[in-house]
Length: 255
Image 1 (cartoon, rainbow, N blue to C red):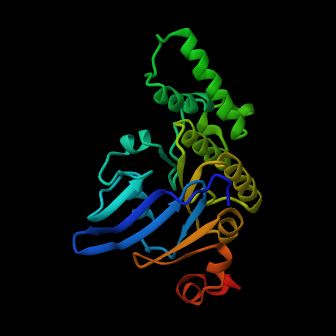
Image 2: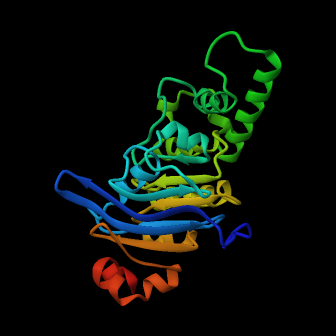
Image 3: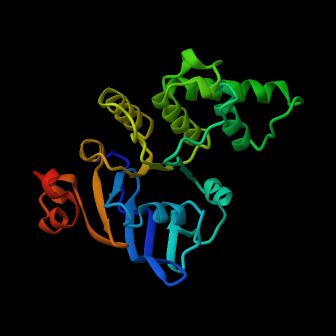
């Protein structure tokens, strides 16, 4: 576990329920994400993982229950206010500006963090700072050589790296990654894991991921969501040995 982990929860869900009409997708979810840890949520398709992420990031409001970020309630807040409070999210489908350069994609996030709009007239000193910070993020995600290429021309794995970089531009301490290695080859997945491990050092990471090798090699703890409820939360070793989890989800993968 990261050295920065403390007992205080960076993110806490208490009795979180979400219904769409008569369909109850999440059923009283209780979940604590410790400060500085890397935490994965796994579960079968239809378990409610995407709905959970949408509630945390402000895309949906909970039907009942509480969501707290660093002790402050964020349930029902808009996504941009939750982002300002210190949480940033990537999506399962890449969410980048394909007709802007890689550098420009990242610079938009830096500008927003500094309260500056994308336009022609800005103080030179502040723009120099913005450009320096953008270059720093470029280096962290390994895209310096593609800085002036259109984002739409990147490979799929490079686009995912760019999106992770965009989550970093906000300066958020809590990062949500939704299926960050989906659709990648084994080599690309290994590179993505190394990238995620590097850029989330000292931060709090909550991720949804289907690849158990990624989850077990990267995360400190794992929560299993089944039919809208948390079945178990434990270390990767504890989860893989949990008979109920094996029966409900992991099956032969646990072996």
